[in-house]
Length: 294
Ligand SMILES: [Zn+2]
Image (cartoon, rainbow, N blue to C red; front, side, top):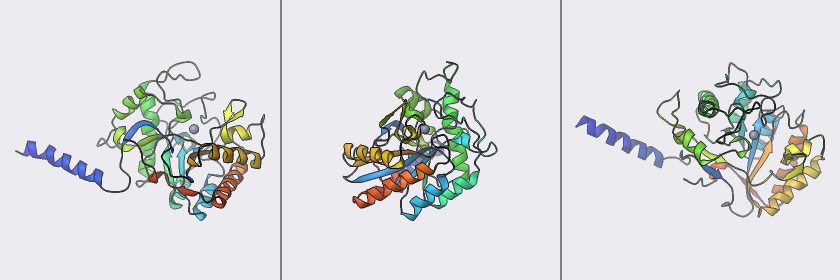
């Protein structure tokens, strides 16, 4: 009797818990875009942080009443906070921690206190698609790919229990086989859930990945030494991209240190875009408001 009742009760409680609250875990499946969003509505996301201007940018957005999502890399934090769960990526891997960043948990607490969402962008920013290789041409193992998400996620969870569990894959690298791999893996810290249960995404972007030149896109391309665009010129490219995307969508910025050494261009860019959005009657909504496909 008990053996029959307990699973039934557990199933009922699990089903009930999924009915409560605005955000429910749905697992990591296909890329989520903002194409379903209402006219003149955007979501702001920032990748690859923290960088030198992450907290000021977070505070500025807070003063504007905007809830942004910061997809951060675990390797940018001090090792006592975010020990590598796997061999770190090396310079040459996209966006890897190829600089001396060593941020501490005060950045996470600041962003959290401003009401922003902290997203998981992996520990070392490796490519996650099946067959992706490191700088030596060796394919990443399934163990490492799982650890890239779980290791950083466990730290976020420990520090900020209320954080929202969104995932964005580095370079939007993703495929069905990777989804199946992650969704079948169990969290080694809290064995109640698989990755499937804990995360939503991967979250993609509609605006801000436009071609600039020299092999880099968006704001990263703007600040590239070979392009060296002004803040206003870069802002105009974002505005054109917003219009071309039908005045709606998920915008991607980058607040990582290697984007611009002092980060001040990024801060000014975001101010210009937010001002333009306000002047043109846009709604800047939270990622939480997006319908995430099951
Ligand atoms: Zn990235």
